[in-house]
Structures are given as C-alpha cells and as structure tokens.
Image (tube, rainbow, N blue to C red):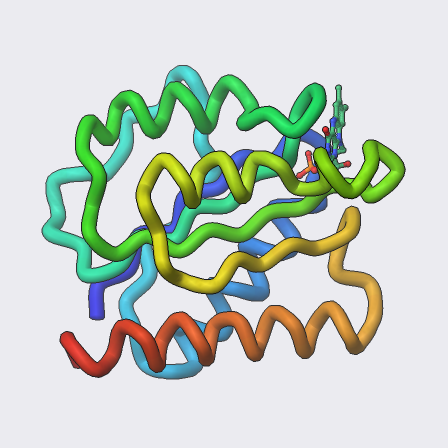
Length: 146
Ligand SMILES: Cc1cc2nc3c(=O)[nH]c(=O)nc-3n(C[C@H](O)[C@H](O)[C@H](O)COP(=O)(O)O)c2cc1C
C-alpha cells in the first residue's frame, strides 16, 4: 500500500511516535511517505494514497494545532481511509487529553482506532500500544488493498 504519514510536532514527542509508526508500516512492506507539517512546505499530495495517517500534539484545551489545521485545509478533501494518532498530557484533564486526535477523527469520520500517547513513547507499554495500533489499522485496511 501507499501510505501518507503527516504529523505535527512542536517539541518532538509526536515526531518520536511518528517515527515508530513509520517503521512499523515499513516492516510490513508498505511504502510510506512521511513528513512533518510546516507552513512553508510543499506537500507531496499528487499520489493516490491508499491510507492516510495523521498525527498531532494537542494545543490549548483539546484543540488541533494550527500547522495541522493548515495541512488539512491544503489536503482539501476527506479521504475514505484516515487513521489518527497523537500525543498529549493528562494533566490538561481527561476531557482535553489528546483532544486533537478526537477532533481530527471526527472531522474525517474515521472508524479506525485512535492512538493516544502520554507525552512520548518511553516505556514498553507505549511501544506495544504503537505496534498494536499499526497492526489494527493494517488489518482494517488490508482487507481492501494489498
Ligand atoms: C500551549 C499548550 C497547550 C496544550 N494543551 C493540551 C491539551 O489541551 N490537551 C493535551 O492532551 N495536551 C496539551 N498540551 C500538551 C502537548 O500536547 C504535549 O506535551 C505533546 O506531547 C507535545 O507534543 P510535541 O512534542 O510533538 O509538540 C499542550 C501543550 C501546550 C504547549
């Protein structure tokens, strides 16, 4: 499958998750185009991707960060297969924890499982959650396109 992985990361936590996610998809033999969203970037959106993976940190009170919002606007469509991950902090309250993940999943009407990591993947439970999430996303998608 051709997979687009776009992520927004201010201080590096979400980038760490994105790198693990990318490695897992590649281990399964998929072609991943991966980048960090940025206001000045030229995005490789001409390809007909089979699966979109979007990742973001969460900004003020559960919101999607501005650069990811801009990327979604530039995408200009709601692809049928979008899976969302993100990082956040429970100290912002459970109501807002990784709120961007829920907002993006709602916007894209995504039925895929959502991956939420507290800050950064720093223990085996986090690494396992990432591996399991990629496996679940693939099993949902692979029934349609190999
Ligand atoms: C201004 C600001 C607001 C934040 N608001 C939330 C929030 O509402 N919910 C949440 O889960 N995390 C919130 N966070 C925490 C970040 O989402 C979290 O630290 C994340 O892992 C940062 O990812 P990054 O290192 O990829 O930028 C906020 C952080 C900042 C700086």
